[in-house]
Length: 120
Image (cartoon, rainbow, N blue to C red; front, top):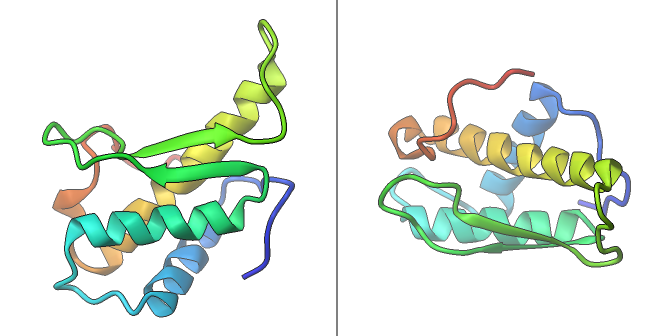
């Protein structure tokens, strides 16, 4: 895995590739705790996206997205559409790779509730 500075387009093949790398790199099995899986996903993406700090926040009982995402090299200015578009893309990469990891572990029911179906 090498660091990425330019965020790639959202494609299911990328989510699946990163999910496979995560499962292999962290030796994640079906009986791993959800908290550990979520922490591994955060660590992986924190290393992958060079200009971002990604961390595991908390497992919310109401199924809310459990990650915090911060841009390190740039702060948004008022109505900075480009900044927020990229942040949204990073969030989607994280969301759908996390969903893919849980799906590959047959744990779809543990996906965040605000995850419906991957539109990409």
